[in-house]
Length: 81
Image (cartoon, rainbow, N blue to C red; front, top):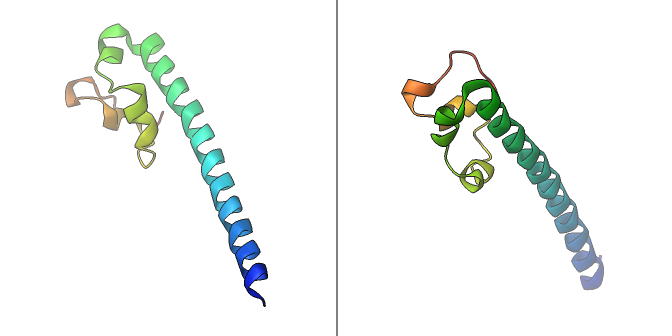
């Protein structure tokens, strides 16, 4: 395998990883929007205002439970976003 073939292979791998990351973040963006709107409509503005910013929720992609973003007094028992 020549140097140019190796470079091309690494570039293709990088593109696939980047594309997977983009799809993950698009899905995450959709989840954050739906979770925030659900909290606003079902639990009211007081609980909604206790949520962190949209960006904070978006970039903490390892957290998929909306309750973990809320202070303890606003948490529900079984909500999974």
